[in-house]
Length: 477
Image (tube, rainbow, N blue to C red):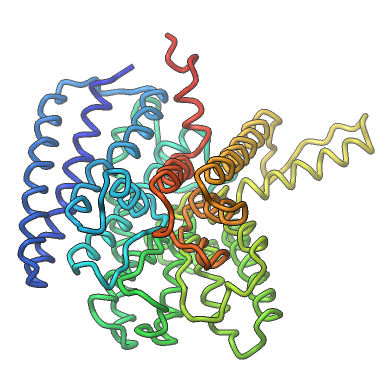
């Protein structure tokens, strides 16, 4: 195993964290929060120097890697980065333990959007820090999905083919930086456009910056307490909803649309099977919300349905999607968005494939002598591929159940444990408030928050990847 190469890329991750800290320090200077600016600047210097030393030491690392190396790097990245990004949180008086700081950093980095902190009590530099963590986390989620998980066939069958899928054996790490830059550029453009339209629609500049970064990454953390309608207009809500949809869309489809800029790419964007699946989920949520609240709250139901379907979970107004039965919300949020996106959940492509396989198996039972291959998107899918998807579904369900059990043992009631486990596993933190408003993350003890941290990391890493890494056979030569 190429440990030195894994070590080298972890050094690059530290340098990236240092850059984000430097941006937050500059924000602190602009906001005249000089103690916070000094904190971020000091941490940026320390983390940056350590990262550069690691990169210098690892310059002679092997130039190629195996799929095992990529999996190990994926797991270590998601475990290490919150350790670094939680350092600023330790300076806050509301944070009294490392576990709590690690929870906050993990929630932001994995774009979960769960927090024990009240935004109104935080300095603006820390709100900017959380927004940057969400945006960068979304970039890394999409990059890993394209470079590592798609290369290892952990995102399902039938993904969109584009210039992003040009991997050759042994070049996974080499493509991380190149594809990461493209995705960062794409999400930066989307966030900037969102910011401009939010400001035009009347949203304050600072809030527009944070919301733009959060929406494109489907993060869920907001810069103000209370409902979003207090500082975001109706037009701004539509802008955020569209941005969240773009964050939950297949990033390779969006990149081809940006690169080609023609009617064919635009048509592919709307007709992509995962995108159509998102539209169907939104339509069902809107119908259920309309039946629950009536026509008077249809706008709020619409935008919040988009927020929930994209695994962002923004709360726009008092009466909205939270009036829909909790079981329906949890089910749709656990499904998630596109495989190659910032959204959490099982991913729509897997659900569609499982239903197609189930229908074929039922047909085989009535016609056992017939040869009935499973076809999807014009391709014949073998049973081995479906076995992998069924195993992922089993592993996802197992983590969900174990999370409910562990949270119940930590002191939560059953319904609270179900909502909290679903929120963390699907990386949709605001789902808890929508389904169980009587409890908040700030009401939970450290043990419950630590369990949620593990669940949200498992949901973001992909459970099969974690199971593979912890298996004894994985480490045998």
